[in-house]
Amino acid sequence: TAPVIAIDGPSASGKGTVAERVAAALGYHYLDSGSLYRLTALAAVRAGVALDDEVGVAELAAGLPASFVGGRILLSDDDVTDAIRTEEISAGASKVAALPTVRAALLARQRAYRRFPGLVADGRDMASVVFPDAAAKVFLTASAEARAERRYKQLIAKGMPANMHALLQDLQERDARDAQRSVAPLKQCDDAVLVDTTPLGIDEAVAAVMAIVKR
Ligand code: CDP
Image 1: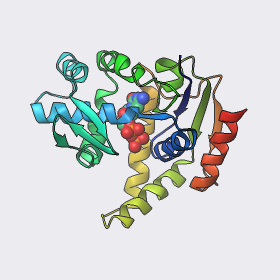
Image 2: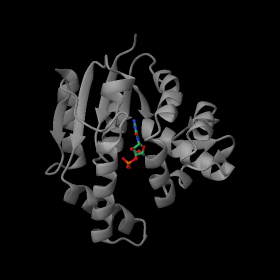
Image 3: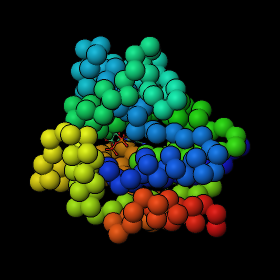
Image 4: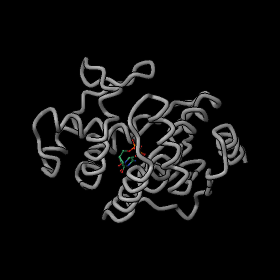
């Protein structure tokens, strides 16, 4: 079977950017597992299915007409790359991700991304549940303050309104929900290597992960 590099960590830790860069450096495929939870939430909102309707949401998750084409994310023929990043859908993704049946419905789809020459997968439970036999496991984190500041800068750069205090509070709430849910709570696996990116720039974070992958 093809090797997997599992990169887990909290919201805004830089996992996505780092995972994508590591995948490019290795010539591996890349799975952004969070986008599947986001797509599920968006599909539910569009279909008028309540986000706490576990059976209804799981049915949508199982049949998600999602495709990833050249950096864009499609739901059927609709480009939803930006639509899945709104605050509403971020909160919705975090809600549907707490439903065990929904997580189970997305499991096979995530594992299907494992192809030669290899896969870099980022999320919350890549090392613990989806790819427990990963060749390398990284837990990428940063202080809540550093993560809130990064998100703040991203929003300002896009010309969007941003409030540091609100962002920090939102991150801390999402951290708590991710850590306290009953299925696949966010935590560092015993066999994962911790990378704290609080003092690191993106190039340094990528280098730190590459050093773990190569050892
Ligand atoms: O930007 P952020 O890290 O918050 O989002 P994301 O990685 O796109 O994940 C969206 C939501 O899906 C989060 O609220 C996570 O709790 C959830 N998720 C999960 O439960 N398991 C994963 N493997 C990936 C994401």
